[in-house]
Length: 198
Image (cartoon, rainbow, N blue to C red; front, side, top):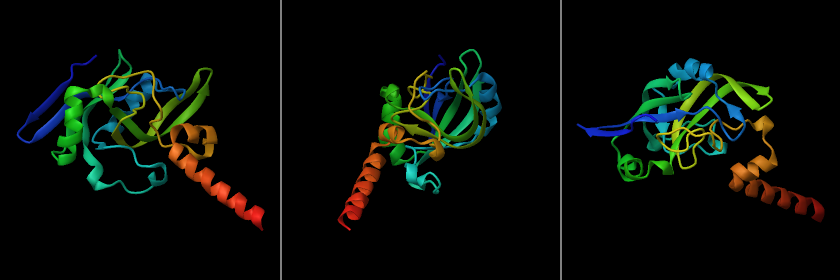
């Protein structure tokens, strides 16, 4: 794996060689080397936020207070089939109080996760992402996608892209967003009880 460096000097805070995208996900999505190479320019200069937006906020503007930096010097490590960057952080209390202590002492506790749109095709192993069409952000989250921590790629993740609503199932919603599942269930229960009382 690439050497990891946390640099702090003259007000600049840079996390060198952070993993942006790995090769395979537990959601059954593969990110081939060619796909990552073509997508690398899209990740250059991408903003980084602390945490993903909530599902119901996916189409809303991101909050400036959640902005922690941007990704620069994006490159693909062909031998490892993963994309890495240097994460240039903004020197704010959010970064100093939350991001740096974890990055310096326990980077395995969080990692990067992309919010992006892509074109996929089905294969016998699952879904292959043929092309990443647009990247909205690469966010720092507690349960990352194809990266199992800030500096290393993994073959396991939860969900790094925007959820495709047309393919969303109740089982997936229950697993990935239990808060929304419970809210929907409660709303349906109220609606059914109201109809039954009529």
